[in-house]
Amino acid sequence: MTEERITIVSGGLKIEGLLEKTSDQRGVVVTHPHPQYGGTMHNNVVKGIVLAYREKGYNTLRFNFRGVERSEGDHDNGVGEQEDVRSALKVLENLDIKSIDLAGYSFGAWVNAMGLGTFERVDRMIMVSPPVGLLNFDALTSNHKVRLVIAGSLDDIAPVKAIEEKMPFWNQEATLHIIDGADHMYLGEIDDLKNIINDFLENSTV
Image 1: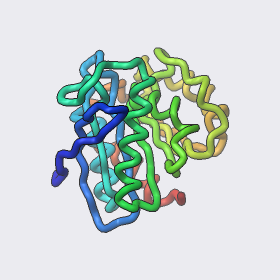
Image 2 (image 1 turned 180 degrees about the vertical axis):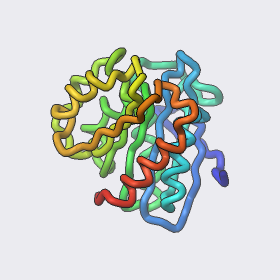
Image 3 (image 1 turned 45 degrees about the vertical axis):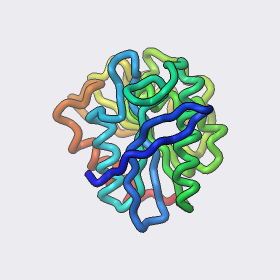
Image 4 (image 1 turned 90 degrees about the vertical axis):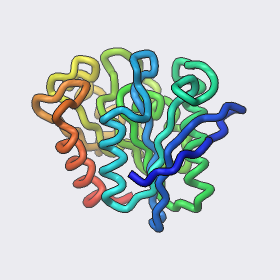
């Protein structure tokens, strides 16, 4: 990876991020799983999402939420974390990126979903294992930006049946991909995850 370390200012806090710039006018911000369970921007699923976008030429930005590793501040139960996402999106806007995707895994997907209505520059959102078994997603309703949801058939934190029930409320036109045999950690399943995202990027318009 040829990412550069950057500092993102979010609500007066210094947030650490990894940015890879390309000549493309498309970009993605990728968010990580729950910090209280060891989640960071170095998570294997986060890296897989970043790699899938990189292979398609996108500018990529992943970062650590407030209170994680070198990022200042404290965990804020998803509230301050939405400000962190907003600040990361601003970094891409300032690079004159014309089309911005937002992708998140687990807790990161929840934070993204909770703030999506206020993230005006986001064109599309991908959620990997949205943790509907643990967190409330009721704030996400009828949003055309929700395009792709990925989950594992053995994931008890993001149970497929519960996700299927919520998909019509999120976006009736969104696609749900189930990776057979995968649990919440996606061990041994990252290539399948990347392939699904690659196919989406090839065939989906903004």
